[in-house]
Amino acid sequence: MKIVVLLKEVPDTYTDRALNLETGLADRGASDPVVDEINERALEVALAYADSAPGEVEVSVMTMAPATATASIRKGLAMGASSGVHIADAALLGAGLGLTAEVLAAAIRAQDADLIVAGNQSTDGAAGMLPTMLAELLGMPGLTSLSSVTIEPERVSGARASDSAVMQVSAPLPAIISITEELPDARFPNFKGIMAAKKKPLETRSLADLGIDAADISASRSIMLSISERPPRTVGVKVTDDGTAAQQLATFLAENRLV
Image 1 (cartoon, helix red, strand yellow):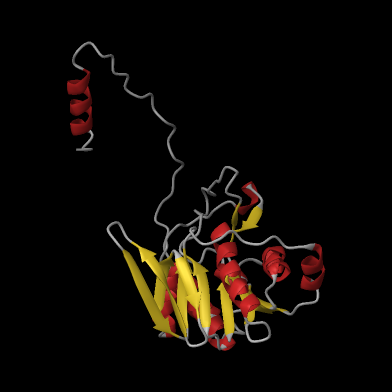
Image 2: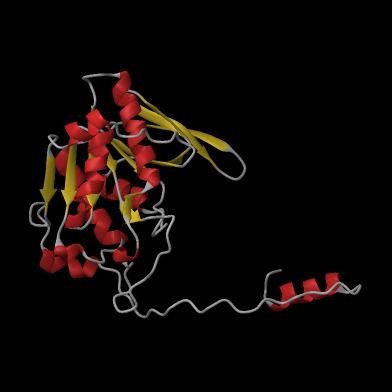
């Protein structure tokens, strides 16, 4: 079985984030880049299954990111993945969800994967749509936002929680799944893994390698119409309880269309 885990490099969640007001893109230089934690948990799901079936499961990590993201995918190799695919092309700068899904789908097809594992949403864009878009493009069943996962040689299953129930869902392989933060924390790369990662195969692919014409991708881009800096917070309304506090609160909520 071959499992492909999608990794995304994001700005460090523990630092302030900023937008470039000229391009409308995230200012990647404003904080240190890290592998998104939810993707590390996704990799742990794949590696835990590989540990239970040694020699029978190959785990590969894949990312679409600038050329500078090599260290992030090497971390996935150090954690235990056996190979990596890094999609890097200058024409992908500012790619939206549609273009990202199209490119990742082309790369996944070339891998002939049995299972694709992703996080339910990234900590920077937080769109939560990419796994579903990939399932549609690849023609695979998609089990999204799983809070538990069971992988078998021919099937994958798990639990998906909603506001009123917990659903048990399953699908035959090949399939794509996305997981939530209820899955276990990822393992830490040890010294042996870090040294071994330097020798593991890491393939860098461009749009041309994937058979995608860079001249034709403009139609797949999101269009930024305008951007402005978030205004500073205004002073809040202070309510003094002189016997009419409840009425003041109700009036405030009504005026701001909160009730």
